[in-house]
Image (cartoon, rainbow, N blue to C red; front, side, top):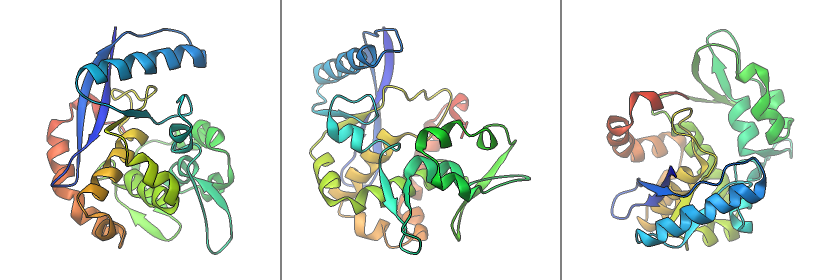
Length: 230
């Protein structure tokens, strides 16, 4: 057995409810094994009253979930007409105490960016610089959420489609090793839509942060210390 979170968009006030679900785990690295685990997770979520659930990852059996993966979700820059994935933009924007950001990573594939040694062995993360925009590391998921949500909104068909779901999962996400999660960000997008707050959130990065700070602060108090990694 294993446990994973299902991320459920809240209504009334923007936010995400993290519901821990226990389910049968199918070990192995094959995609087929991952998909068996995803199916078991969603079946268990259904029994808990959460349905339908969309797996957001490259392992998803639903094409929408694959498209919404940070590895595939991309935007095109206005100035240079470059296509950049959310994952590559996130990794390349990292700033450490004595190095970064690394804008050349923007042109890498998402898989290359994820494995890039400069963003894995460079000491203490101090912030993010996305082109000319500066982002702090607190709230911890602020920059990733902002980047993911702004990119998702640019795809009108995909963003509309994911609003049909009750919650989202990411079978690969390990909360003991990282904080940023594409399924969480997708749920936050849907919550902003349902709360009628999306337009305000997208006005600017400052507006996004101010709107969501109350939720982020409540979440920070609930996250165990072992989940403090970036």
